Each structure stands twice: as structure tokens, then as C-alpha cells.
Image 1 (cartoon, helix red, strand yellow):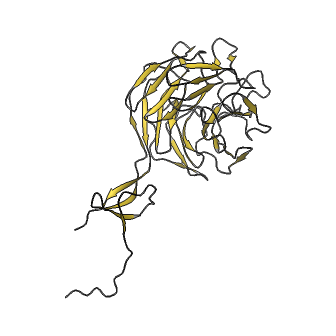
Image 2 (tube, helix red, strand yellow):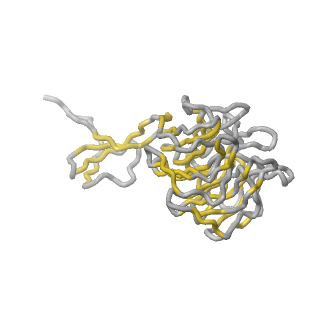
Image 3 (cartoon, rainbow, N blue to C red):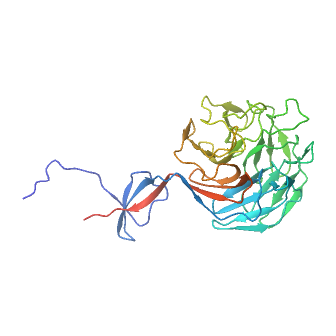
Length: 332
């Protein structure tokens, strides 16, 4: 006869439905499906090919999610600024209403059905025409709104939503220095300049997060690519002691302030390398983009999207990161 003396454990939760916010390692019994379930991490951290864009371009910008992204602007072959806008549904791109002002090196934030585009340039001809114009997107068409950036510039980054946006960094040849640290906040009507800007002035940087909790990383400081990383608390920027492992500009960015992804970009050559930010430091991922390039981007740290870019391409790549998933536990 088997003796169970000394064996002990914990009770398994008996639930009618899966918990809304389970923690890793949690076990429960679903009385509706009559299944014993658990929550565990599934690590993928790789890029896979997605549907190609309709318009080949570089220096474009994007926003949204991996399955509902928005890409607009940029420069098409022949070095011509474009107003082309496309929507991605997780499989393919569809052309939609064009920007009112064709431009490259602009910034876009928000969602596929509620986007905001601002800044950018028309280059060539030289010198570039810098834009402060702001446009809003309703899922079908763009409308130029009265509020314009206080400082016209290109290559700026952003965070937030259509009605609560943060714009930071960028470049303007008429400024001294050329690269900017300027930080502005948009409230759905107008832009307000923040008294203090980035600690490291730069353009062509990555940015993600919200208007009150943003992250800035990478870019060009006017001399060379930088890996400098800064966090925004709604009022000021704080420099992190930990920079990106690969200094780069014109990179893809996704995620939030404490869980971000940086990929691709330009050092002295285009790169494919990918790094993950955990709120404190950057970690190199073993694999990067299939195609080294600068590019537009959208999504989160676990489900990002990279598209277009230089060298001129229509290629789209979908990133799948570490995911915590519900699993059925098999017992016998």
C-alpha cells in the first residue's frame, strides 16, 4: 500500500473562466471547459516575413499595432517626397487617403483609425523645406489641423495618442546646433513647448510610450550615431546610464517606456540587429531583421512590425517576442 505521509501541496483554484490577469506559473481548474490550465512564457524573439507594401519608400513613419498598422509619407525612388498612406491588416497593405502635405522624415503617432502626423521635410531640393504642419487621420482621410509645431523640424520621434502626443528631438538646418532637443506636447488642438528638452539633442531617433511616460533612444547627435537612452516622466527627461549596445539612427521602435524594442537602423552602414529594453538596460537579441535597413515601425515589444526603408524596399517583417500564454495541463 502506498504511503502518502509527508506529501503536501497547495489547493488549485476552481474557476468558471480563465483569470483576466494570471501570473506566470499560476495553475487553475476551468470548471466550464473541465480543463486544468497554467500560465507560462513562450519565447520566440524572431522576425518573419509579412506582406509587401504597395509603395516602395524610405524615411517613412508608422504607428498602430502589428495587425492594424498605419504607414505614411517618406521618399520614393528618385528622391521624391510622397504623401502615400497605407494600412496593414496583419497580412497585406491597402492604400488609403493620402497626406495633404507629402513629406519624408516625419513623425506619426496614434492608431490606424486615429493617427497624427507632424513635422518632416521635403528633400530634395536643397535646402530642405521643413514642416511644422500637423494632420489628423480618421481611418479614411487626413485633415490638416490648425495647431502646428512651434519648432519646424524633421527626424523627430514621438509617443502617445492622437489627442495626447509628445514630439521630441529632430533637426533643422537653420538651428544652431542643427540637431534639436526640443520637446512639445499636443492636446488635440495645439502644441506647447516644454521648458526643458532632451539631455542629448539628436534627430532620427527612436521613441515610444505615452505622453507622460515616454522613451527616447538612438539617433544622430549631429556628429555620429548615438545609443543614448532617456526616460520622460511628463515633465523632464532623465538619461539612463545604460545606452543601446549598438549606437544607431533611423531605427525601428516599438513598445512602452519599460518594455521597448529597437531594431535595424544605420551606424556607418545599415544594420539588422535587434535589442530589447526592460526599463533598465538593453539586451542584444540573437537574431535580427532578415534585411538590414532603416525602416518604419509599429507595435509592441512582443508584436512589432517593421516596413519599408533604405535601401529602398517594400519588405515587411513581423516580430514575435516573449509571450505569456495560457496552456492546458495534461495529467494522467
